[in-house]
Image 1 (cartoon, rainbow, N blue to C red):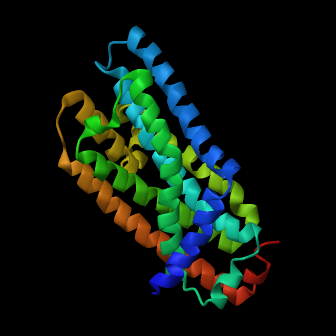
Image 2 (tube, one colour):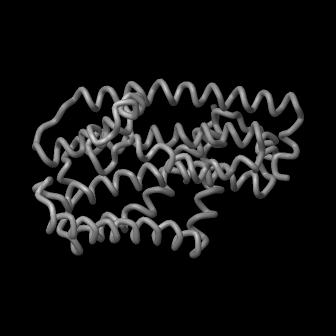
Image 3 (cartoon, rainbow, N blue to C red):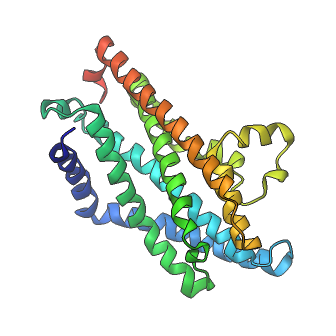
Length: 263
């Protein structure tokens, strides 16, 4: 694995983002609007419900965590789609780039892309709502890490579909997170779900992350088992996603569809 090639591909996407004002505006605009919207909704819930002692902090913190997950996943997908739309994916192998180098480069670039959009939104929460996500303490890092890994996993899975089925699969890139969101128990406890849905939810790392975030903010305690369960599931799903990506690439190469992947 060549760090120079990884860095080169990283720079390609980094410059595409940072040298384009519309791209930067798009990255900042949506997270800021969403966090602000959820902040005002949380204020309304706080004045009409006693379920949470800190409704604004709990709901808004979970909204920020979910947005980070969404931006990471969709960021990876968009970076991969950039290569397809520009019909540049096959050109990468002239370098020659390895699959592992492409994935590694996109993983780091997706993080930068997500942070560009999320940091301004996080900064807004303090003056507008008096909330700081840093209230989660050192465990915030582990929550973000689990969400980051799962977001990348979803991105790799969607990219595998793009390799296998072509650009017609790109609609899945936008709908994946919305499909999983109800099972992630982002804004409500898992007990809210029907029993059969709870079994599905427990197979996802999301439920452990958001349950733990609420546990820390509401009960001021930490259940390390939730963090461990989320990390364990993430490792399993990430491994399976990478295997599927390699398989999809191999099949696309055998069938000769890589050359037409931009069509």
